Amino acid sequence: MEKKLVFLGIGIILVTIAFSGCQEEATSVEKTFENISFDSDILELVNGSLDITKDKEIITRVEVTLYFKNLLDEEINVSYVVEFCDNNDNVLYDEPYGIKYLPAEHTEIQPNIFLFHGENVADFDHVNIRVLSYEVSE
Image 1: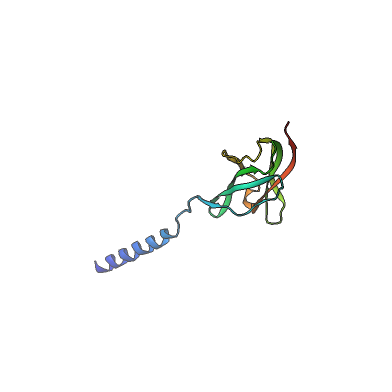
Image 2: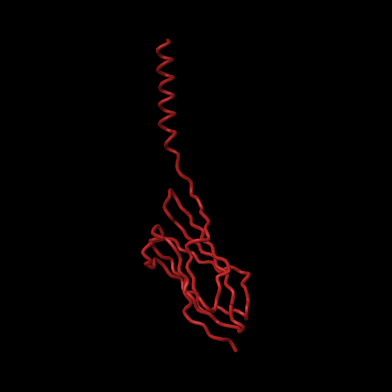
């Protein structure tokens, strides 16, 4: 009887140890204000953030949120592109925004949100934002 209890106890301990390493990692979200590149004489990036969603340490989704300020004393229409890049600065996905109207010296209060998911998202490293063109409104 005593041997059966010892074997039962050892069996329970071994089963507990075996299952303790089998927990599935949950999806996590990291927030950062880094890894966003922007350079312009007409716009200022007032605030920018990345939300990186990972599943088992593999990136599955990237969302960038941007707020701009018009640095000019004139109303402008701006065309820019948001590029999601890998660590070699290769563009994995780009999202041309088109034309955006900004009043003189205006700071946006509504965010510009861009999403990258699907093919190649696991290779994501940083975001480049480039102003393509602008024109002064009349």
